[in-house]
Amino acid sequence: MNDLILDIQRASILFWTALKFALAPTVRYLLHLPARGLAYPVRIRQAMEELGLTYLKLGQFLAMRFDILPVEVCRELNKLFETVSPMMFVEVKTAVESELGGRLQDFFPTFNHDPLAAASVAQVHEAWTHANEHVAVKVQRPGIIRIFEADMRNLRRIAALADAFGLIGSISMKEVADEFANYTRREMDFITEGLTAERLRENAIPCEIVPEIYWDLTTSKILTMEFIEGVSLSQISNMLDEKGADFVRDYLPGLDLERSLHNLAFASLHQLFVTGFFHADPHPGNVLIREDNKVAFVDFGIFGSLTDHQREILASYIEQLAFGNINESFRYYSKLAIPTDETDALAFKREAKVVLTRWYQVSKRPDASIQERHLATSSGEMLKVLRRYRLRMSMDTLLFWRALIALDSSALRLSAHFDLLGELRDFFEQTRPGPVARVLELNTDQNRWVSLAKLGGTSPDRSSRILNDVASGRYEWPWAVQESAQRRHAKNTEARSISLAVVGISLTVLAASLHFDPRSRILIIALALFFQMFLITEMRRR
Image (cartoon, rainbow, N blue to C red):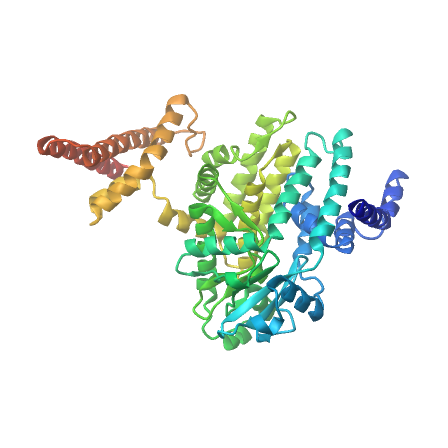
């Protein structure tokens, strides 16, 4: 009964807020009168701010759903990630004491009353433990789970009506509502957030910092973690805007901005393309720069996890795009999209390739503006194509794009010279050498057998995929359609080189892994080296 009363109360608030922000523009639209006042994306954003917690989170969730909403609405909803009004200290104190089962001073002899940051779910305070450990304490707002569940019951009722009348075409609003509910529940569970931080910390590379979690001072509603000394990208950006580069150099004498941004890019790309488990909300307030130019991630409520298959497809798509292989790039991108009964696959392919080509060409122009080079511009155009031809993407894929766009946005706020595609090219050259490069590495690297192990583990799959595509006619060569004799010769040379590489690789791996007698092993290795040397000669002839 109590739940029903709460549902009615929350539904009433939703109804009156909808009337307040939507009635006048709807009437003007129906009467074919010119629009007045605020644009409709702004009205949507303001309505969600007024409705509070659940709708703030819903707006943040929908800000990523370019496959459902127009780009201008998504961009406006991105403003909902900004700071909200903080809780009173007495509420914070009560919440900490209730969760930890004692007086505040029993756990934190020093606890700063003023929050470091405040958001819709929680706020963060600086504190010290009895062991003089400097910590950050994240405290969940009281009563939000019960309100959230009531709002979700109402949203499911609305979604069921929308599906019954087919208001969003082939997209199921009930599925979207369930996806949002699961996405938000894990953000409100601080045990999950702590485990996320630990997993990121275990996978961190040398230029990346992730705080340690204090589990004896952590519950599902209180999260205590190591305090990281540093300056947020948001603070640095504000200082640059308001006081200029000279002030920043004096205030942060050890700061090497280009190096810091490179570290941020490499750490983010390592999460996305190597481990597949990533911080999905690296906005400027959640990334700190330390005095040694290492980057620290904080606030782990939003995270993404990619399967090996998803990670390989995304990495191959971005890698091919970074090197200008548009046909191959699209082939991988198309595997990310989920078609519906209304999808026009040929039109999607045609328009998507135009967008990919334009993005690559813009990235190569030194005079291109920040807006032209920004990933959000090109990805927004691509997602418009997805919506136009009725394709969707999985939530994890959308979180991937969110993380990559946030990286690009944060870096461009601090340096107009930041080149995301350039960083991607450098990253892939270091982490994803191709089969031919691996063969050459075998002949030049002192650690030959280490290289051989790497080669045996990864190259056969990539080489097999290329050869299968060639055999079935799916391989699209990255050259222009108009062919000269020289280009045909170059293609034939590449095909021969790939074939020789695969033969050489296979023989080398065979010799290294199977139990032959010494004479047979020497013969097989000699044949493998012959194929490799022949390959090098072929490559030099090109």
